[in-house]
Length: 313
Image 1 (tube, rainbow, N blue to C red):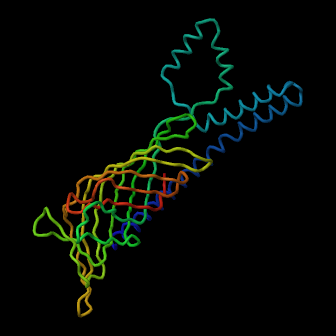
Image 2 (image 1 turned 60 degrees about the horizontal axis):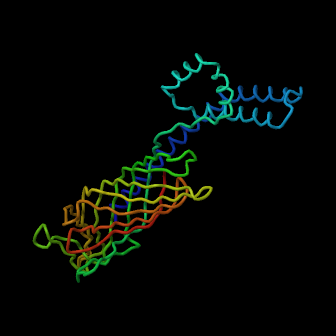
Image 3 (image 1 turned 180 degrees about the vertical axis):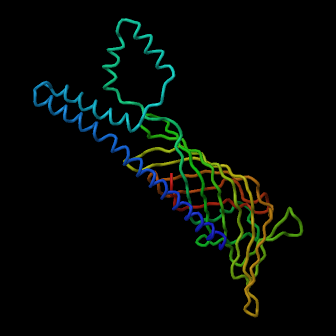
């Protein structure tokens, strides 16, 4: 549990530093953009006012067209369209034709410019309570996991690509570090005479005992906009184990406290996979995480399960 707390504090510091720098960059960029847009926007609004006063605009349709031209002009500067290598060739062919290009340009004024397409990236951070669901044939020495003292921590990068023009459906692919810390009640994980066999040793003198593992994780999900600000993401993940550990704090008859920390494979699966559901806004919400296979190769059928808070993209 101490290792988990250290990782949590370090991760929160990194997240705070990142979001602060991003906010500063966004603020500067928005200020510069407003300075560039304001003079041109004022000129267009003044011209529209003069046309209204002089009676050049005679019906609501003309006024609507003028307003859309102004709006789309501002939006085009805020979200520049990607260059199209075939555009120059098409314009040349139309200019050589019967003047159809002029009609196309006139109609294009009322067309909304396409936003920049591609992947967007951001930092993702998940933290929550955890346990391990037991399968059939539970051994007598199966660990008794304390849900409220066990935790899952995940942090890393998420990459999102919109799958439709309305930006209501998106594909998410991540690269994260996933960490489980399970608190057991007076049970220490240790080898049972061979590297292919482990056991949980009951000891009433244990003040604190934990076991867990860390993974390099690749989550994949589809997100759906289901309300004005509410998003739902459903997907799965696959993770490769990088380390596993067992730690305990022993209290002696002389009131001494001895910390025992060890790192080994402990007959754990090198690969885990499962599913996940996220619900909330684009930057915060709740998650449910379930691992479909056991954290151990055999002996114990323990499938990690976690619920908690999601922060970031």
